Length: 81
Image 1 (spheres, helix red, strand yellow):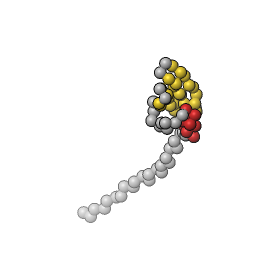
Image 2 (image 1 turned 90 degrees about the horizontal axis):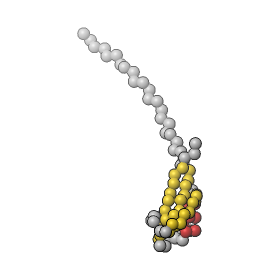
Image 3 (image 1 turned 180 degrees about the vertical axis):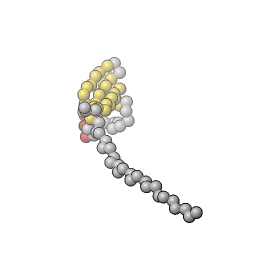
Image 4 (image 1 turned 90 degrees about the vertical axis):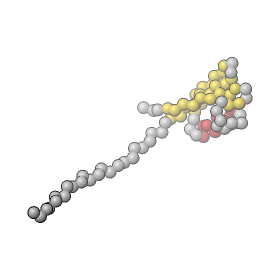
């Protein structure tokens, strides 16, 4: 099953609510996020400004392959009596 991560930010009064790519216009900002694999899924407008919602697939991390440790052999102690 595909897993997703989400990102939301807004443009209020000409400034972005996040710091990433600040000072860019919406097209430039969204293009930069697109290079990182984000897909714009929705833009909503409310009284505070535009809200942008993006998603991208979560990349499954490969599990590290570990070698099984060899069982320790018990050494027989030889005591001279």
